[in-house]
Length: 394
Image 1: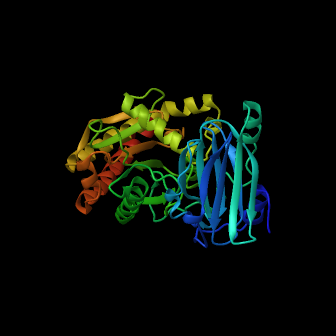
Image 2: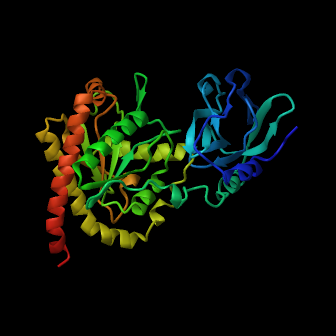
């Protein structure tokens, strides 16, 4: 029998993490999540032992379990009790997958172990706790090197040219984003980003990097770090969200603002941050990237550049006959747009909650028009920006 505390198991395997290959698999028929009096017990049967860890996190309270190379196929068939408010699973970084259980209040880990006497079973029990006890467990720091990928793992720009574009396909891995008709936003945006990358590289004046080129989870804060490491001239986050029926349709361009332009924009920004939180990423330190005063000073120049970028993209999309939202340029407090020195924009290519938008998002012809429009808009913006920059520095 092997019975090790989960954090020790993490240490055994973290140093040699590699791309997820699904060496171990979940047996959903032999797994369960049940309520006990004041507790939740989880037993997962897997095909072979793997390094793993368990911890609780706050805001909202949740149990987070990380596994080295575990395929969670079938997890949706493991029905949790009423104390578990949500259940999601997927890849979270190279070589690691994550299971997140939302909890209905503060709990602490009372027991966590692996039993290999008869197969391999992971057992975790969490028990109701007071706020102070819960806060003490939830605030334990991550091991060094766990929160962010090492610099060597960052994507390198490709091609030649004066304009370096960081493409950011939204969501990924444990966070699939919006889902409609068997299609999820993460997969759709990754395929579009790859197509857009090829369009830009063919033009010859662009260098292109991507925050992800696989179905993996990348925290919002890490996406900004990657853009800086790549020397990005401009950052483009790609999304195709879902809102209440009839609330949104057509391509929309979002720039950063403390106050959202409307309630729908505010809801989107809050959802994006909440998806990161639910996946197990703490955003509380995000604004510590640089001092807030320096950020405000930098944005005095970057803010107008963002607005000109949005206007240029709007014009290019209009010229290509792209269906636009009735208010095509909007703003909200998206965390992924908070880099003070890199002009950044979030493009909702359409809304998966709109049947018409979803058809367009999946249509090869429309996607070709949209990639061409983004290319044209970037070129027009870059030319204008280059002409204005000397004037701004006077």
